[in-house]
Image (cartoon, rainbow, N blue to C red; front, top):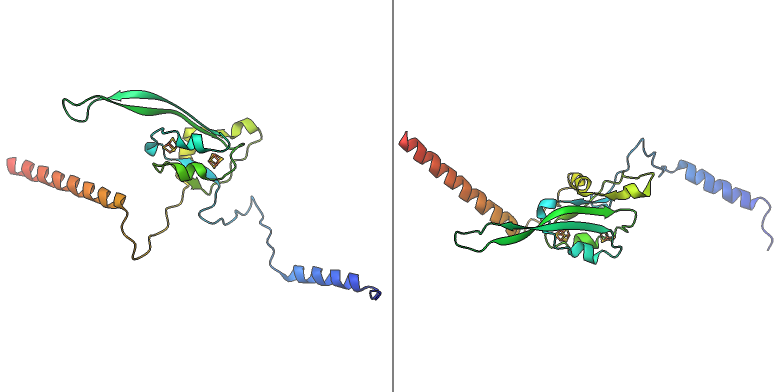
Length: 186
Ligand code: SF4
Ligand code: SF4
């Protein structure tokens, strides 16, 4: 059957009218910042205090875009008469975001919780070479990482929190004891 003349035009106008009455989805970036989900994969932050330079992230990265340099340092024995120990000291930690494909494998495999996703995304550069970001920048991004979601009400307390509380209680008790002793002497 031949189409009714003008039906295509009417259909097109109907689509136009329907779309005109809907709320626009266009974000006026950069005047209006988008509301991103807190767990967005924007950029990777490094909490370098936790990094033991185990190299797992660099080895597992499918793009080979994590660059780590380190050296070994000797530290005194933990107890008198013990053996000296050696530890890795981080010299360089950089990620080339022109190669990174935001797979998150480095964050997943890090056994020491040193890498985190930050929703920060405003780090475009006009020169691709400037997309290799060094440890200071990666550390700055750590402060844009959102706090972890709250635990379920019935969840078991993480052992790290219990250990930290025990240490804080021990320190507070030792401090109170030393203050009491000082007061007793005066
Ligand atoms: S997110 Fe993936 S590609 Fe990017 S640095 Fe981590 S492991 Fe490599
Ligand atoms: S996996 Fe974690 S601890 Fe190991 S080098 Fe990478 S960031 Fe550091």
